[in-house]
Image 1 (cartoon, rainbow, N blue to C red):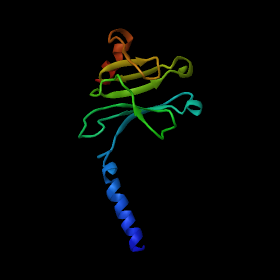
Image 2: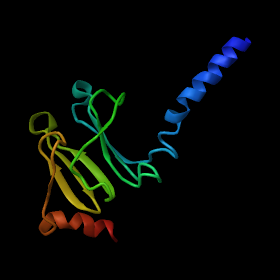
Image 3: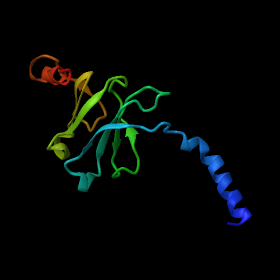
Image 4: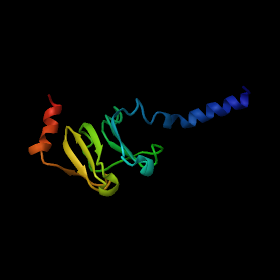
Length: 133
């Protein structure tokens, strides 16, 4: 390798060094869900564990381009574990997503833009009860 190419590679790595550490020690994914219409809408969700030891938050990430880019969805508590993420079978019509975790059962009817907490009593309360066993 020529000296000029080696210098260019070292310079590139030095400049990129900050972004290489952006996901230190890496962002562990807990669960992933794929839209029932993935072939048409390229939508998937991924629930993270702590995004990093330095940040100490969890997030629900969404992609609408098949995983090329990911954005966090607002409105869910960033400190609660997420155990399951489920798209409605009729997601293309009703835009409904469910997230179950330590913080309860959440429902969105607008592709994850806003969330409501479903009551902990009755059939929905069993999710947290079963997970704790």
